[in-house]
Image 1: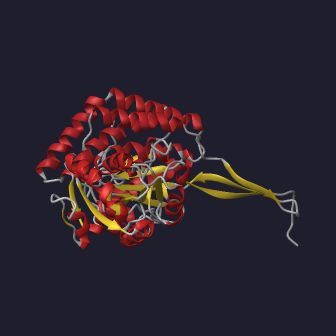
Image 2: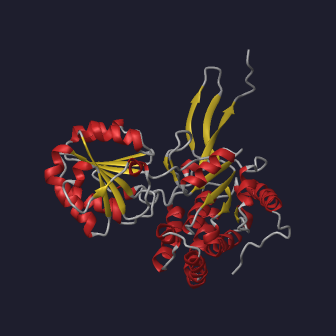
Image 3: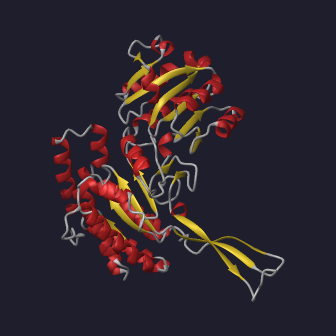
Length: 427
């Protein structure tokens, strides 16, 4: 398998400088690459991922063995694990990105001035993007493909626990680029697990235009504190589901169970359940019973504890904890007003949902909850770029500037102002 090799100099700063120089050179070509060339690279990469599934799984098995020996927790192990379905999911994600419109060159708006100038705003790539992530080898495919289709060169720094898996996936992407006649350096993987390489990337203002960290709070806080490069952040997925008094009981039971237990280690997993006080007698029992039956630990306030002896006491820390595990905190609240107050106090601005048949209550929740994604009668686990029809995502942005929510192709572009005149002079 053709893999990116480590530069002769083993100094992390020197490695990053070398990656940066190659990235800038590749960016000049990729910026003007045709949609067909980019799609050809992605199609070939998808084919290779499928064809070399056994090698990718063998590399992942090597990572999984080391991760278990190192005591990686269950949520992180789930994120790291690849199987046949997940490998196919990576390839299918590339196919979906091929089918999406190329945002580069799209005219966002245009207008004419009285002096005859014609002005337009045109989408262009951001440039060179650094993506720093933990565990998930699928991010290698998603981030590489999204950056490529949007005309951006990307330098990927995956977690050390996914090093071999990510190398195997990145090799397929780079071979796809070569087949399409594009520079392989459009997609680069930092070829060292030395943590100093992260610090070097964060200082790389000479060639990086944007840093996208994807991982836990410790990673995000470090990147935010140390980076001299603009950062597009994804803070914690402290997601809430509010069950209103007007919710259908069966719907509430099923949606909450899916939001929490479909996959507990994803950022869209519900971590806190809020139940309208008038609904405690009718809704709380079926919802909590389903969660416990699925193996979820339930921690609740005094009112919730009184409903079921299996519910343990929730502390203040539970309201601000992203468990990424089969644990959920549950609180009784005073209607939608109380739910929104709780979310405003403890939420991370990621994804929050309401279950209700009352359209007015739903509208108020959707209008007033200030999160990147707000949902009505739907599982929070739909907080995903693929589910939004974006093909994949580079992350869920909880920032407010440039992009918010799933970051797909369009969100990986900026624009330039194109002004056309006819010898026009300013008086």
